[in-house]
Length: 421
Image (cartoon, rainbow, N blue to C red; front, side):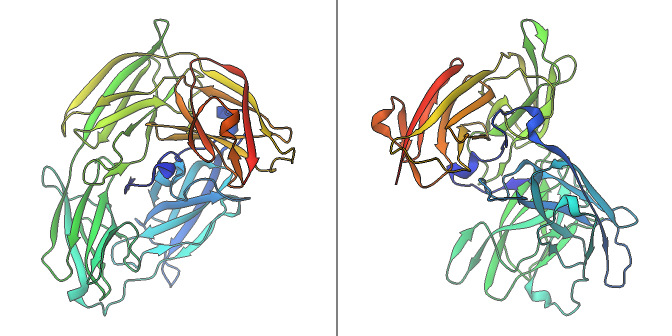
């Protein structure tokens, strides 16, 4: 899903792993969220778009932004009986859903625990008395002029008499295009115009700035995007069932358009393919380390950058060599002798990959992080009450509670001295 530019700390928080040893088994995937959507009279509603908008831990506090979890990119539509389902969700998370349909009022749910589903959701009709002079309307087509049905049209900025901003826009609903590609959304009186982001399966998405209410329908063209292919090998043999992902290096590329990490699993011959990428931009390809891992291979690919071609074009990255992962073992030592917080984690941040691994620290301060590519990391303490004792470490300080480290090989004795604020 397209998102706007975020702070660097949030950009690094796409993925997570909840165990001490970050393996595919500990990703804890497999939850099933099911539900039914109907109108106020109990009649099932077909074709309703259901998006996972935000996520949070079922127990405890979240380390990452609510929309930065892998599962937040998922969406589906209801069938003829109003039924929908999401499979292979993270077992440790609960979710908020956004439901939208033409001629219906968009609804965001409260937190839903997949283990307590199925859920029944009522979607109300859009009021008949909306002032047409306050409606923003448009038609979404592809590059060949064909209407795109089921596209998601979401506000991502606005302008009022007193200010101009990007990001969250209150009281403006998400819309979905009908069979003819048409959409409309209502603007409150205090808004002069709204920015929209339009996304749909099979396209790379686009943004349109400052659409004003009461005007002729805007024409929005969804580009096809570019394709990237390649092959992963290890010692001359195909690296099959290996997780790999791509992400834009410039998070503000394309007038602020940024797509979260796009993942794939290599085929039996080691090949991979990514479609519908925003074109003519610099990307990074890398191994997935955190909760997004779906394949069985334990091999890793160190991050590499490349340029995506123009819209509708393809780039072949050729043969990329992968390697065995490295392991980091060590301990966190509090210099004042006080006990460490029970929920302390080390956050292994990667840049430019859109990836972060959260590693639990045991009561005695020991930790183990497995499956890491040989790269540069920012290691950060999750607890705001602790600071890195810079004078006791040889690594470069990146902030009061983080430091940088270049990992070429496994480490058995990484010492992290800390102190209280």
